[in-house]
Amino acid sequence: MSGFTEIQSRAAPVSSTGAIGWIRQNLVSTPMNTFFTLIGVYLIYKFLPPLLDWAIFSANFAGSDEHACNSGGACWVFVKQRASLFIYGFYPSEQYWRLDAVFVLLAITFVPQFFDAFPYKKWFGIFSITGLPVISYFIISGGILGLEHVETESWGGLSLTLIIAFVGIVAALPFGVLLALGRRSNMPIIRTMCVIFIEVWRGVPLISVLFMASVMLPLFLPEGVTFNKLLRAMIGIVMFQSAYMAEVIRGGLQAIPKGQYEAASALGLSYWRSMTFIILPQALKLVIPGIVNTFIALFKDTTLVLIIGLFDVLGAVQSAIVDPNWPGVATEGYVFAAFCFWIFCFTMSRYSMRLERKLHTGHKR
Amino acid sequence: MSATNAQPSPENNGLAVEIKAMHKWYGQFHVLKDINLEVKQGERIVICGPSGSGKSTMIRCINRLEEHQEGQILVQGIELTDDLKKIDEIRREVGMCFQHFNLFPHLTVLENCTLAPIWVRKMPKAQAEEIAMKYLERVKITDQALKYPGQLSGGQQQRVAIARSLCMNPKIMLFDEPTSALDPEMIKEVLDVMVELANEGMTMLCVTHEMGFAKMVADRVIFMDAGQIVEENEPNEFFNNPQNDRTKLFLSQILDH
Image 1: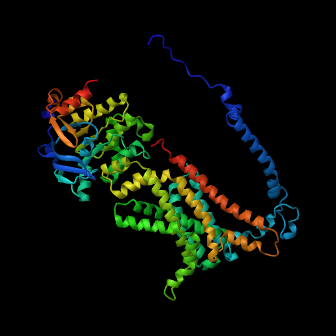
Image 2 (image 1 turned 180 degrees about the vertical axis):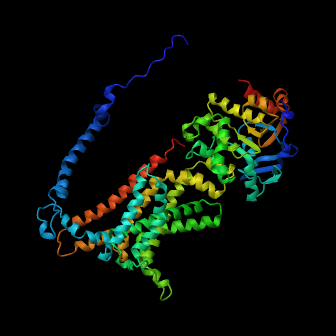
Image 3 (image 1 turned 90 degrees about the horizontal axis):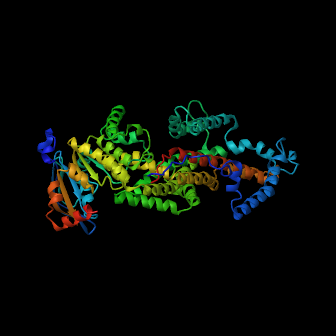
């Protein structure tokens, strides 16, 4: 080993770090890359200014009727005037505070999930999927503690969208987990039942599920027995989405190495304990992108309740844009509805990315 | 070193593991044929043989990771049957280390060690952690207790896996090629832990190709081929005076290079 001298580490050359290094590596590294950079810049130049002009600079924000919209830009006055319809649906206006209270509760329980150091964060999370739905139901529906009862027929708008999506998400995940475990069970009866359930629900369009729930189901029920249209729609959505969820989760379960099951068994853990503590935490973590994908699809699928006469935010917008007092505001209405969906879906997407990063424990297996 | 070195314990009069005329098939493939084996309390057994000879399958039958179809297996006097209660009882008494460690990657080293004591032995968390730290200290890995397995080297992971098994206070330890997936530099640190464990009188069944380890601690070496026990003897006799031609061939192949 004579003649060997250790070389000390030194800093990287300036050309590979800093802003110039970044531009060189990312924007103009090859002729092809430079070409796409130029195309990107051109597209931004071509489309961004007119869009901003329509949506913000020439848009009308002030006023109370269609005559306020005369500058050629977007007519946000319309959205402002109809905001209560879009958000609360046909809920009685003197009771809006009840929905507001639920929105506030929702925010209080979910915002902490975005901050690592928030105290009792876990309990906020647990409450949000257990206590919150129950409390919210009683606040919105009323009939107790002197709150006036509000029929589900009056629920609508963004609040209805959120109610359906939230119930769907909270219920579809556990059902999906059970179905996925059942489909991988050693017991043939359970396995067959789960396979049939999943394949039937996954094989029919959601629209036909909702139609059957609202039109056909009552025909089979004994006379005089009715149950709520919204509840039927929710059950349909939960069944439908849990079938999808089950397949996503099954993908995760199959990716867990056999050694993990064996190690859990060798330590004496029972089936349910090894699933709860060993297999599911790893499997669910692996398929977070797939789970959130299903959640987002579910969130957007809630608009389909339109066809059975429930007015979600899109339904409310559609009913408002045909108002003869407001000609030519369809674009604004649809953009608003789209934005409502986008903001929630984007939030879910960001949250899932956070979760993935947080749960990553430095293993690649 | 021989069987007389085993430290006497109160249960030493019985057998730790007893396998009688055991057969196993994978589908139509007859993988284990007429296995007969008696392991005394405190005995250290090394099982070797070419790959595919059924040695891993045999020790995996002892804690029912594999199911045998014919014959009898008794562990600590309890017969392995389809009875889930019996299987659970046996798994509580039998620890196992795997070739690929099989640590739980989403739990810290400490959580890996405390999970089974808390949920299977119903131990309070504080006590489980105390015991876990004791065993982690024995495998010299206390400073890594709060790390995740993915942050450790292979040798460290295998030592954690041994500690995790010991936390359940097993009577018998099964080792399924514990050093085969390790870099040469790390084999020794794992073998050192195993030697220490052997010297403390743990009943051990090790599938391994570490012949140095076999010579040093084993009371008996078993050679398997094609699903059968071909030869068994105490280590000196086994290595210096093998009886069977198949054994001679195997030994010449693994020792002469």
